[in-house]
Image 1: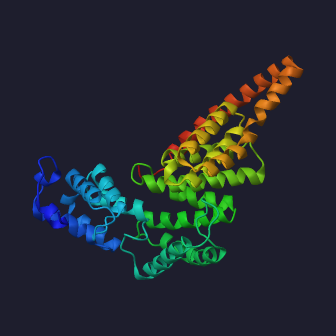
Image 2: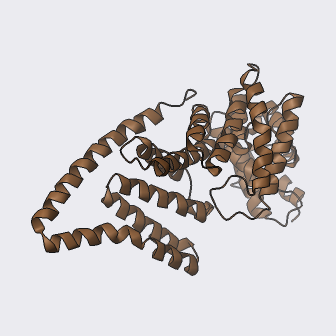
Image 3: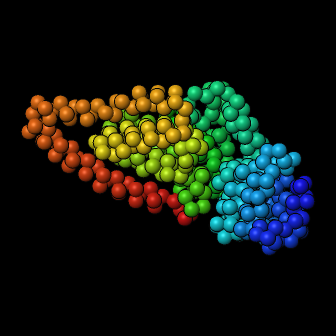
Length: 360
């Protein structure tokens, strides 16, 4: 059966029974729009498409016509449609869904000067996907691309910040890019400053993907700062924990196993720094359990060997127990007191970050 034959037919239990052919044709018209900004405008002007039947139709189309179809069915549009429905089917919901999927620099209408900068940024980001990149947590592949992007951002940020007609999501998108570059450059203090501003805009309810991305780079920034200062008594390690956990909670390991693995290892190191070794063991077991089921055998073996250092604390405790049970008990009591104190402070930091968002 051809695609348009399928489009015209109505099975007994599919969404074609509750939609007209004109409706389904309009949905297909939206799917065929390649330009992201035009696609966003079309959906905003046809909010009747933002309903569960459209999502069901799109799911059926993708299932029935996988990559062999002449019509490309990007998963991004399925995500946008779902987010638009969940958030109420309004123009704002559609706009937020496009921003969350592509950043504000792609789908929104920009002044000509900013559109030129946006095109350059998108070119550099696209080029970086073809460059060798050993780190799953690096935003831009090579130093050349980093330098080119770095040269574009300061003037753009300054002009956007001073233009009240532009939406805050545009400034936050630029801040996120700059923050990622600053993390790559190991400049955590400056990264924390710009990423915290972006985090006040990209909140979980409206922008779940951008929320996770900003929290990931914030977590990496605080982790870098902790490493540079070697100060585990400050709030930096607690901020790193909160941000890394937020980022990990919003993603799935199978989406990017390398990124997930590296974030989990940093989280382990943070909990080790506050001497919560029970949590360290839980995380280590979760890493190995997850990798054993979805990673290659070679990757799993390397990960297993590299995580052996996390067992060092248990070895030390056992040796002290054998040599002096009294000393071991004193060490455990002191460690428990310090750990509980830091965990109490961790809850305070969680509340601070929960209150960071200004837009819900």
